[in-house]
Image (cartoon, rainbow, N blue to C red; front, side, top):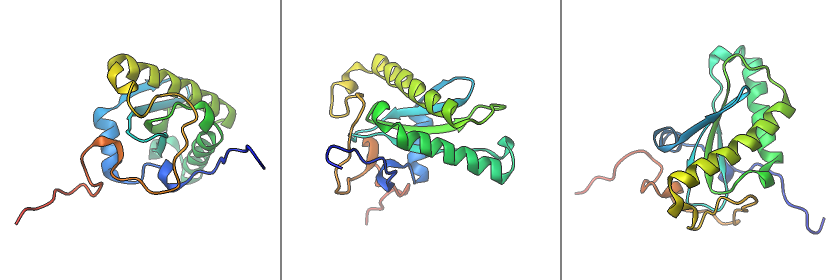
Length: 161
């Protein structure tokens, strides 16, 4: 197993807090195709993170959960082809037919398109720590607050005495 890259989908690769999702929706750019809609913004980490949103309009719980599994699996297996340093919120396009292979190819092409758009809008950000090149690997230790938002992630302001 020498030289093999882990394809696990660990906690630090996920958007988990409402504040993280809110920041992506507030600051992010949107790219889409016939299968997926991706909202994303840069983070100050060396790897990309994924959040999945599948609204009720997509179908029953079984259908929604299938979409979530396909999107997570595509992200997990295509990590090396997805640009590093992005926070992504992915959802299915309204009326799109689910298919793992279509989702995987769409995810890769849309994230590259998103990284290019973000680089054009803020070229100084791409020259910092998160370079937008594929294959960023997270360290094993935990990191501080994500994305340079200045928040602690709790969504609540600290009170002064």
